[in-house]
Image (cartoon, rainbow, N blue to C red; front, side):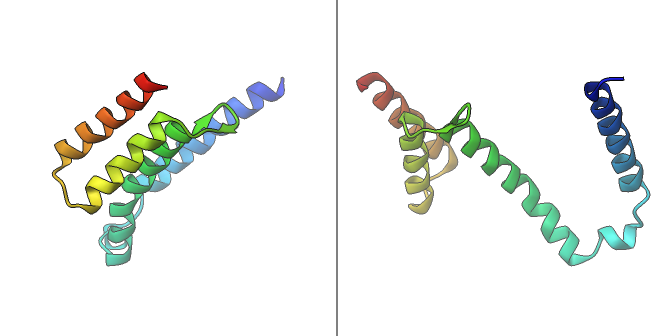
Length: 102
């Protein structure tokens, strides 16, 4: 058996154990305010990490290009309390304009 199959079987077992443990957690633990706060923040953290990795990394290098400017424009519009569609369109226009220029 190769290291590949050992890792596949090990990760499969870990995924199964995680799902099994998650289904057997008592409701009183899940309704705790701290757990609820953490559960509300997990999607935000995951989405932020996804945006950062897809925008600032290329293979193993850190890059700064038009996507970084789009994120900066989105952050500026969010700070200015712009509506979400305006934030998305503003970031896309900024990124596309800089892509076309450079």
